[in-house]
Image: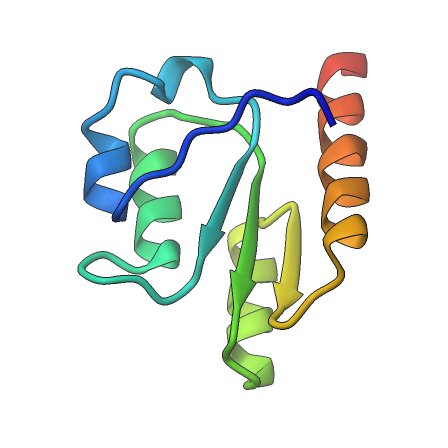
Length: 100
């Protein structure tokens, strides 16, 4: 789709990278080794990083989705998910970001 993407082994690696200031949208799993996706999102907010975050998860509990929405997630997808739907959401989020 023409986007530049980077992957990280864990949330802590991402927080330690130099790409924080150039991130336009973050796609994060909810459950990861070490820090969870929700903890990552909260750490980013506490650090003044205000870019959209889309969560993916294998968790089927509605409370997990509610927590993502309460945090202000830009999207939420349960595994397995349709890759095209995810990319459509990314495009929507990035379009809204550049329009605003």
